[in-house]
Image (tube, rainbow, N blue to C red; front, side, top):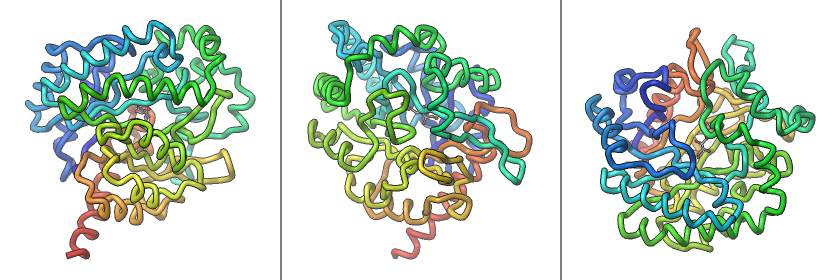
Length: 355
Ligand code: DNO
């Protein structure tokens, strides 16, 4: 396991590479070209500049999160082939710069969804939270404005204003896309890019749906053991793999995460580890990484990663906002650094007790 931290790039992130370098045991960043629109080609020069910046700080790029997928691919429009071609060029350019891990998601319209980005916990920290009852009352067209208004001036990952300015049109474009179509469109995309991934050794790591159920009646297909297994079987090459995200899967208490980690084994290329507190079905708050602070057992999760011989990058996912930090919701330095240290502590204990 390789400990990493997500970094949105200078100009977007309040956290610096120099700070990340000082988190003990953190060897790399998971980053992106944050200004790119889904479907745009990433040039080799742009990727190289990013890589050189990260390496100059004594870190590596351990993977990209995300190269986002254009909606035309998810919808299955004839224009998808052009965007897939662009995606392939981006993958080749990444590979030529030594990057071999790409996280992406296949959620229609909205990426991860929350109803509160700064819910106050009893200790004064703030966290992201989700309440299905609130979602049921929101007009989806207003959803972007709501998220944007709560984001303290930060652009949230996967919530590109340019794309979501046309959210009504987007919903219309998805109106005939059910789960089966979305699944087939994902398989079409994967089959088209796999030869390139196999040639260059690129691991594609799909992110789980967050939360792990349909939001605004949009289809969602990557959120439980059965549908994830179906996806792995539909394109049965190791390069078609997963970002195992405990916070996303864990939003549904029926998901047995350690069991899923052991089941998917070497198809897991990237780990997102985060804790949350379940209140009732459809209602949860994010929490500190510590097992005792939430509903997930971090020891069992890390042990499952150990048992599958996981060697890929793993990162503490969303943290609480603590100690007065002002940063992108979920992505402050302090609590994620605490999370990284805690997860590394669990890992050390697991490794040593297995000697
Ligand atoms: C939110 C993240 C997601 C994730 C994408 C992956 O904080 O978990 O935005 O990066 O869904 O494509």
